[in-house]
Image 1 (cartoon, rainbow, N blue to C red):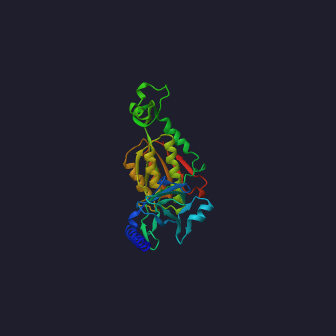
Image 2 (image 1 turned 90 degrees about the vertical axis):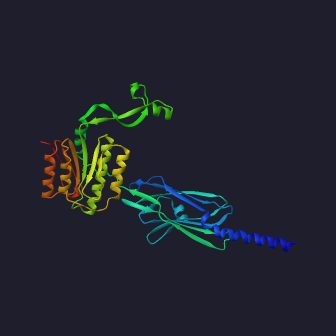
Image 3 (image 1 turned 180 degrees about the vertical axis):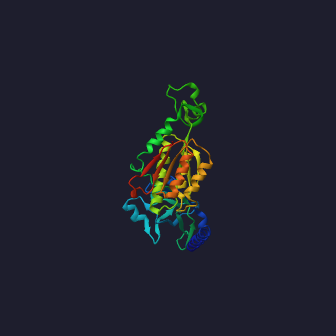
Amino acid sequence: MVALVFVVLLVFLVLIEFYSIRRMPRNIRFFYDTDMNLAEPGEVITVTFRLGNSSSLPMLLTGLSIQFDDVVKFEEDETWCARHLEGGFSGSSVRYNLTLPPHGMYKGRFRISLKRRGYYELGRVYIETGDFLGLKSEVISRDPALKLTCTARYREDDSAFRDFGGIMGDVSVRRFIHDDPTLTVGYREYTGREPMKMISWNQTAKTGRLMVRVNDHTADSDIAVLVNMEDAKPKHRERGLELARVVCEQLEDRRIPYAFYSNGDLFDVRKGLGKAHLMKVLKAIGVARPACYYGFSDLVDRCVARGNSKRSYVLVTPQLDDRGHAALEKLRMHSDLAICVIYEDNDDMDDTKEEVAAQ
C-alpha cells in the first residue's frame, strides 16, 4: 500500500514537473512604466513594475533583472542599492529574487533620474523562471520599453535675462483688455463674481460644482523664439537650449503666444500657447542633436518670408560675425517691433544682451 502511494505521488510530481516545464515562459506576466515621460536632468522619476504568475502552480525560483545605461542615476538609499543594485560595464541592473504563489503578483517601484539631456529607451528586462521542482530554469528577455525624454535644465541666469522683461512687458501691454470668448484655456470654480454667461454647464455637470471658463486675451502681436545653432560650440549649444527653455516657460507664464523656430535639429513649432504647446517645445529641445542644417541668414529669410511685421523676436544665439549681424539687421528692418538677442556664450562677453528697438 505504501509503495502504491509512493508510485502515485511520484507520477503526480512528474506530471506537474512536465507541465511546469512546458508552461514556464507563458506563465509570466510583466509590466512596468514611469510616472512621467518628460523630465529634466536630476528630476526624480518613479519606475513601477508588476511581475505576475498566471499559473495554478507556484514559481519557487523567479529572478528579475532590469538593465539601465550609465545615464541613469538611482535615487534610492544605500540599503536598497546594496540589496537590489548590481554594477556593470556600461550601466547598472536592478535585481529581484522572488517566489511567486499561484496567480500571485509582485508589485515594486524604485526611483531614478537622468544625468543629461537626450532621448532614451531604457530598461532591458531579463526574467529567469524555474520549474516546479527547481531542477531547470529558463531566461526570457524583453527589449527596452521605457521611453524617456530629458529636456534642457531650467536654469535662469539673471545676467543673461537682464532686459528680457522689457520686451515681455512691451508685448503684454499691446494685448486687449477684454477676454476673447473663442480662446478658452481652462476652467475654474465659480466665485460668484463672474457673469452667468461665463458658466460652463458641461464642466459643471462633470464636477458637480459650478465651473466658469477661463478665456485668453486677444493679442495684436506675438513672439517668435529663434534658436541659432550655427557655429555654436557644444557647451554653448547646451546653454542655448537651456536659455530657450526659460524663454518659452516665461512666455507661458505671461500667457503670450509664441512660435519656436531653429536652423538646427529642432522641430519648428507653430504659434500656440498652453501645456500641450509647451510639451512639444520641451520634447523638441530634449531630442535635439548637435546639428545645424542651414545658416542663420537662411533662418532670417524664413522669418521674413512669413511677412508678419507685428511679431516680436527673441533670438538665442552664439556670438554673431559680420554676416550674422547683417542678417539680424535685415530681420529688424522687416519688423515694426523690438528684437531681443540673448547670447549663449555670455561668459565670453561683457554685454550679454542687446535689445534692438524698432525705428
